Image (cartoon, rainbow, N blue to C red; front, side, top):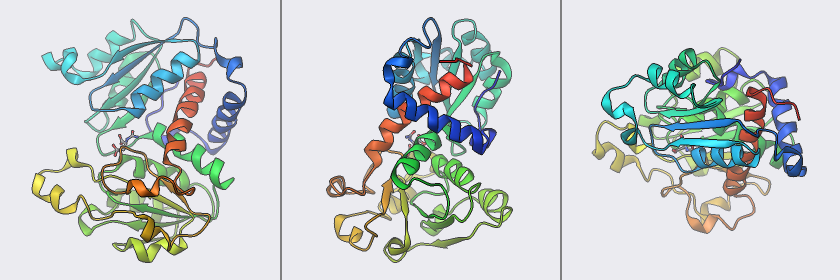
Length: 305
Ligand code: NCD
């Protein structure tokens, strides 16, 4: 039995298999519509979510399975002081697989150690978000047709943005990728990600505060929101929240084959005027997330189709 807590638990070969499976689901949805019949997914979300929770639930329904949903910490026994371990043991009496989001880093791992059924990390604090990375990878694959030799700009809140940490870990395993880390000084990539992932693997990267200067060389621009809920004070958030706003005007400096990704939700960092640009693929990325979650559920439940 396997869980997914960190994207690096999946080998490069397994990522290829998940992408191939997602492509097959896209091409032949009817083939999969009964494959999780009588299986139940529990979504345990102790933090707000729209896409991640609903895409997990849509994924399970499209596989013919059922869903048990807990959409806020306040509505569960966590509000009475129940531990993550006890919640996990309890939910495993009802469900076959769990997707958990939690504000505490490592909480899904604690759940996985106690559940007795597979647990998927659907975002833990400012740490990791492996299934967003699956969505990002399918999007990069479909837009670029490769995972190698890419110049990848990541812009915004690189400190607290868990999707950034997981995506860097995943893309650092392929050859020839360069990272351009664009953020305000206060929101730079944590040094553990720089040391343990980029420097350890001899990956080329630069850090800059200047989005417009970086734009012309990028194959991929991954925009992120400033993570308000992780700030210690509102003043800092207000000062930093509009550090970067991508507009059609600025995008004139971007290459014709640039792909613009964003895990969403967007606050102010991409103006809606950009949405009509064919290089903006963040809503395709949303749909890709559902297909990759379908593929992941099939893999972790060991369902053969
Ligand atoms: C992201 C998250 O929760 O980390 N959202 C998502 O799952 N697509 C990004 C964010 O909240 O900014």
